[in-house]
Length: 292
Image 1 (cartoon, helix red, strand yellow):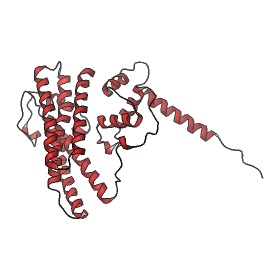
Image 2 (cartoon, helix red, strand yellow):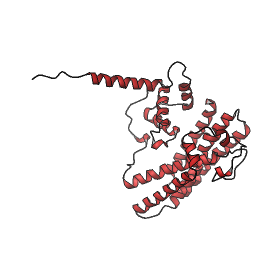
Image 3 (cartoon, helix red, strand yellow):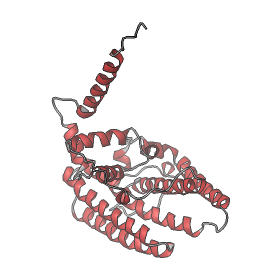
Image 4 (tube, one colour):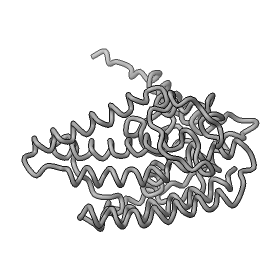
């Protein structure tokens, strides 16, 4: 499975890099959308071709693809269409007009999540009990469970992969709108990109598996963007901050999971023990009070 993930992780990283350049290089929404769709279209075609030419070796791999891999690629297409609509319909007026517009858009996103509340909860909590029904091709489920059902390609679609992609896309859009609101009302200050920050000379010199353990701990406890940050985004952040390359974070998690003798959270346990030791030492130290 690590090799399976490695190909798609590299492909997704390639797509995100291209889209970031497009977003920073095109201020015109029409040109930006056109360039983004060209990049996304090539990758989506490659994905479909690969899936149809090489059968999945197991249901587990098929579920992994249609639950997490395909949706995150498709989410980029949906997000860029929605971003185009957001910019094209944005009012030309006062700050208050823009804030009102953005809040209406946020309410629409929340309404969408509410409309699909049960499945959105399944998505957010990383449920697994319905995976074989939701993410295996050819399995039919009652339409009442799917308020929104697009025309699907039976060879390349499952009951829920498109809806999961919309959840991902709308969370990206929600994040973008909240950022714009923060810049407008002053609650968020624009900061330079990491590449523009000074080099403080701080590098990660510990084991990569320890950094991976820390990243997964922060990711699974939802410490970034109210739990909405993607694992790939967090990995990129740490790579840039600490000048280190994490070649395959999923392989790193495999190393953590396969620890037979020690705890899977060996590094975090060690950190906790070190902090407790220092706290205990500080509490034990009580200066002798002078009698004068």
